[in-house]
Structure formats: C-alpha cells, structure tokens
Image (cartoon, rainbow, N blue to C red; front, side):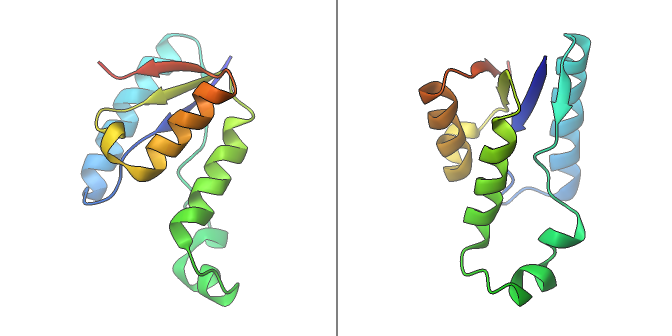
Length: 106
C-alpha cells in the first residue's frame, strides 16, 4: 500500500511543515503504508531551475507533479487545513474523482 500527503504549506514555517509531515508519515507508516514523496526539494524544483525552464506558474508545476505521484498511490492523506489550500483542494477533488482512498488527519 502506498500513500501520499496533501499538506498546506503557504504561510507555514519550515518547522511547521516538517512537524506536520513527520506526524503524518508516522501515522501512515504505523498503518503499513509506504510514503510516496510529494515534497519536491531536488534541484529540478529549485527556483533557479524553474526560472531557467521558463515556468510561469510554479505552484501549478508542483501540483502537476503531485498529481502524477498520486497515480502511484492507493491512498491520499489530507493534513489539517487542507480545505483552505488551493492545491490540496485540487488534490482532494482528483482523489475523489479517481477513487483514491482518502484519510483525513484527526
């Protein structure tokens, strides 16, 4: 079983993002899931690389990659606050439309 995280990041500190991810990953791994990465931090997604590739809408690039990774998953885990985050709402709509199991952070 594989799962991805959908997590609001806008206006969050790096510490808040990491703490939320760690909590969600622990919950999912304890339940037997393998985590599919949706936090894209490699060079391909650096500001310089994205600019040199001519990206106009960087959040849309991240969403597209996240949706691609969702295709590898049985489950999508939605962290608290997902309803307020544009990308998380798109991921949620896709998960529902394509029959991906959904878990919500309690």
